[in-house]
Image (cartoon, rainbow, N blue to C red; front, top):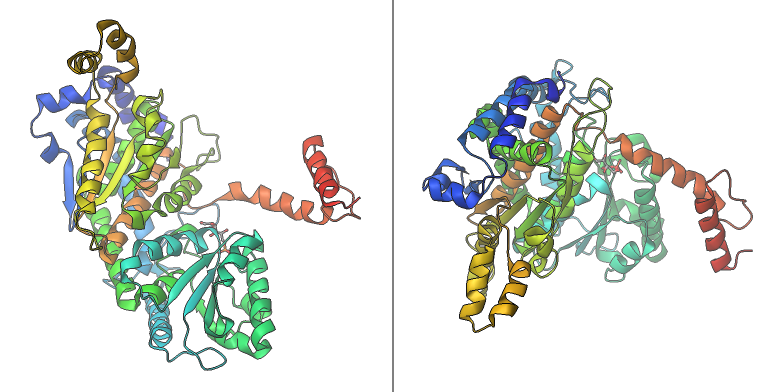
Length: 548
Ligand code: G6Q
């Protein structure tokens, strides 16, 4: 693939940014009363309004050209056809096969993967139904009341986020917990509320070699066997992995292992057996509805041209700000308490996928790649960091997510939430000029001198971009659509930035050094060849613990 900066559309966008980059959206709206219909798109119950972005028709046309010149058609075709697009790991990238509800054959090395996918789903259905009906019991014959998923990164964030998102579909008598951190407090605090007789552990690890997960699983096993004996493991532990050998070595019967495949990336794996905790929490039909939603987005992404392709539009808008208007960060702001884990989930999806400095040909990139992503549920964020988004010196494009209808019965709350979710994008876009602010203060009775002194502080520059994702209600189908939308957005950006979005070598070095430091923390082992800061900290830990 050519480097993006060599593409004609890249140069055209640079010139275009010079020409219109400072135009104020207030004026763009004033000039074009059809801006909302021109720059919004609906797919099923999901409406994406991107009219409050610093773009005009020509911007979107140039961005679509950029996608095409970067190989949009060929790139997405290769992914959906199971080509080994994760070139540094020689793997296809086929999360789309996991929710390929059409059953269209998808070949890997000439073999259709769909029978395997369907068999894995059938096992998830069978097991989740047995647990939920009480047919599957613990070693003492009692039904499961608590599921504890032990996993980290991609084996945690997706299912944890989805279980929170679908909380209205869960049952109070079957709670699902997530333990990821190797900090023992995470496991200890979780188990403090569980009864060994009625607790089921799902140990989720693609490789089954991850230090944190194995440490937590080993301690959980000790907790269980201490109460119920060794034989209880078979009824209280199941594994979700691609590595049967390691699962058996840990002492979990491979008959109680739920499989997936190396063509499923960790952060793209919640659609696979890694989603078992979701099926346990909300039931398999609901899990299937989530797959259906993702499939609907896949079909849209697979077939629509970039101009009317939601993931492409979101990805290209991100590129516009990141590469042409100087933004460093993006904010994801769900006005939906059940999506409180979405920013954390998207941090991994986006920053682990596109936080890369090497192009696919091995050359260092000479253009900016993935931005910093952060967020919190609205309205909490409004009372915290929105100050910087409104008046700070950085450009931070925002995504607002909100449902037209709520699940709860506190009817008077939802209009308050909706009003805030609509007011923030409007405020970011319009701002408030010095003259408006000054006039307001004079009208409120303030003296002329004080009004003049305060006006600059109270002025909002506006012209701060945002996109609003409005959906009818956060149900499994919509959740599936939203997650797939962001997955494909990240794909489009990786394609244009010419990086491999599907590896994550950047997480390896720290893991390796931790292995080296671990034995050095014990008193009789001298700290080895470290910089003086690391060595000083090791010595201080020993001294604080009284090891010396
Ligand atoms: C995700 C990454 C990473 C991975 C974890 C857990 O894309 O690969 O977050 O999911 O390191 O790995 P295991 O599932 O192998 O334990």
